[in-house]
Image (tube, rainbow, N blue to C red; front, side, top):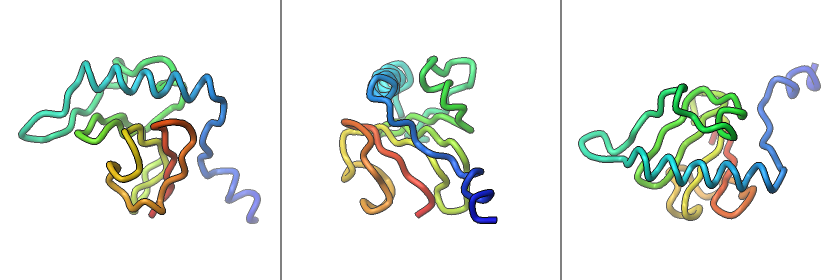
Length: 111
């Protein structure tokens, strides 16, 4: 039963080239869709997702003041996904919720 349950949980990519592409595309999204008042975030339509980010098959992609949230699987406590930002301290969840996959690319699960 446990292997079946684990097979339905998302896992982060580990390929350095793919992570670099995700980071670059996230930076481009920040430049194109700056988080401005009054919401301080910009929800990116699926039709505008760059190739590497779209290849992750996210549920949603949102640009925040701190960086980009690429949510893969929603859950009541944050879900699973990637946060691309300047560092763990700038990210919205507790520092222990993240694993750093690459420079500025972090993976999180529910926390």
